[in-house]
Image (cartoon, rainbow, N blue to C red; front, side, top):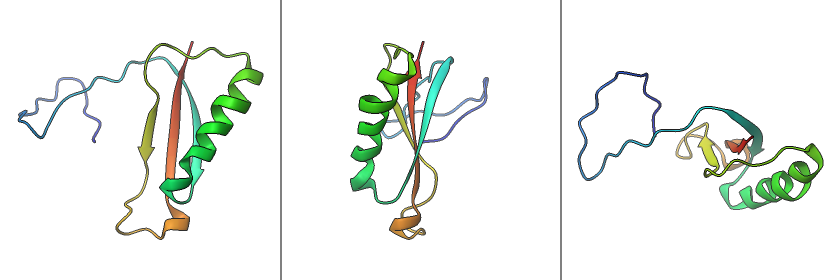
Length: 87
């Protein structure tokens, strides 16, 4: 995916779709390492941080942002951000 500035036009087809990410507050959790261990960071965020934080999740889906390219980055150096929408 890519982030587009407001007003940028894109030609859509069956392979390209636009999804608007709502503004607001997001809790961000960095994850370093293989994608198959992402569940550990998700667990830590929802099981540990969220209940202790006093924050409430919003009713929209969370997001994963893959910072580097899996084809060019050693698995142990992969960086992912988990974004959880909060009230």
